[in-house]
Image (cartoon, rainbow, N blue to C red; front, side):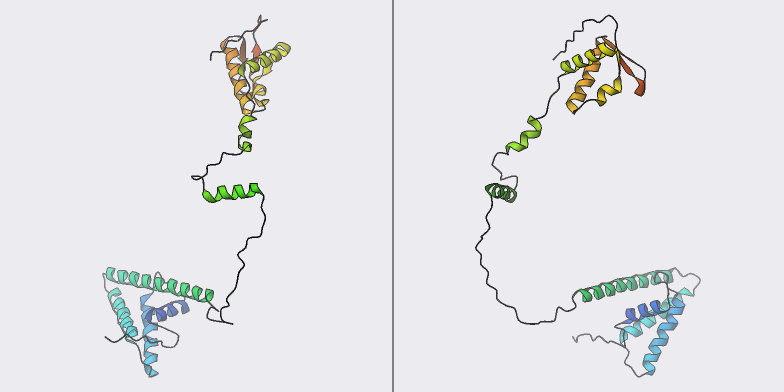
Length: 245
């Protein structure tokens, strides 16, 4: 079987290339092709090629017949088939347009690849590693290389510092400090008790201390919202708090 010949007529490599050129030149909508105008432009171009005694590839003739058929069908009262054919042609044109743009971009990226200034040179490398590292750097590099599953070395002491150095505030101690403050001023803004906490542990202890004081009726909360205050109950000269474990 003979190999199919590809003809390149002027700047067009095929009927889709010619159609895309006509659509771009006359600023037509590729998604809503005015088929009557496109058929006229296309057939006129093919006729000029024949008048110039140029050999016209069969693909161009086939496309001309296809366009004429779409034009004929579109003139009928029921032209659903014409719309489908136009939609199919528009899809082929958009695919061809995108492929052409991508080919142009690839051509720009590969520009100059065929230029060779000289032949490849054989380089010799000295594989001796001469850098000096501290033992700690080597240990970290090893752990990063083997991954988490293969690490067998114990974690460094610095990893436990955030846990060991964290201060735990006891609820009983916080109750004593709140009661001491209330004995001086009789009442204290409830929000200030929580905002003055220096850590999360102290904040939790403050909340539990207030609940315990209110539960044992040794203090009451007066007011609402941001204006609420913790007030020491009258007659509590000695306050004993018993926290269940």
